[in-house]
Amino acid sequence: MDRLTFFSQVVTECTNELRDLLLTTYRDKLKGNSNEKLRIKTTVKAIVTAKHFTNQPEPESRDDFMKYSTPLSLDADTVHKFLRLTEENRKVTNTTPWQHSYPDTPERFDQWRQVLAAESFYLGRHYFEVDVSGEGTHLGVTYKSIDRKSVETNGCITGNDFSWCLQWNGRGFSAWHGDVETPLQAGKFTRIGVYVDYASGWLGFYGVADSMTLIHRYQAEFLEPLYPAFWLSKKENVVLLVSPGDPLPLKSPSPPTTPPAEEEQKS
Image 1 (cartoon, rainbow, N blue to C red):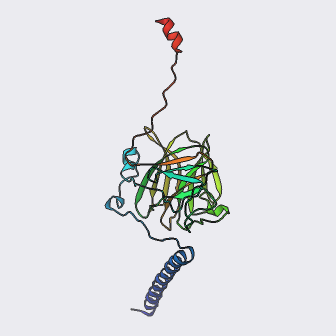
Image 2 (image 1 turned 180 degrees about the vertical axis):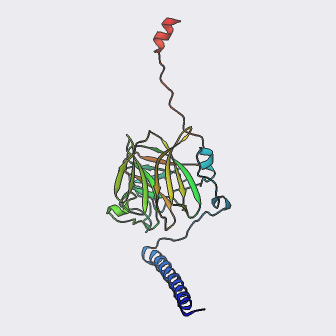
Image 3 (image 1 turned 90 degrees about the vertical axis):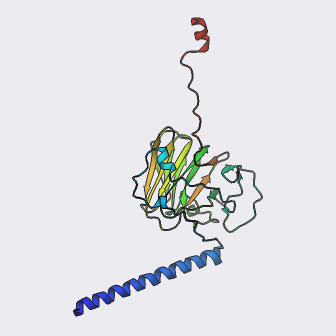
């Protein structure tokens, strides 16, 4: 082995050792700060099964997406006091100005009317559906480190660079990331499907009906587990976590093309 090759090998080995040391120190400090200063649990609820390690193509039909469906519940320790949880913590409603007597916890949102899911996404593919109603309903994913007490926009899932969000304003959809709104051209949907391919960095929001309609798609580098998150900004906003396999919402009946009175006259 010549001298140049020897020195190159030494530099590579030292660099790798330094990298591993820095990563270990970073993780230890992050965990310590979360546990001791914020007292927020850092347990990763990763769902890692064989179905997530696959070279299968991207899903297209609802049945394809349902292969990656993940049952979710809302975390009662995070929910804002103006939000009410029902249906075994699968439904959340904005009840402003009625405040609920939830105990004070470090995890609870104090300023923004938000709630996180109890489960997180880490590695692999994941999918869930929600029924939404009311203007000003926001849904997306965020990191657990989101500020729960801040009045600044970085405590909201629309206002930081580690949250990715879709908004329904009663007229149309908008995408929010890093406090920037992007209006979208999409139809009206009451059921939204959210698809995460963690390793590929894909996050997609779909209108769920007889077919799947892509509303918006993000490409990002995910560095922490992702928690489904919801901001109900106005009174009577409602979000319902749909259980995997629940039927599609019923369509409103189409109005008759001919008034009933005219039909009777013809007969």
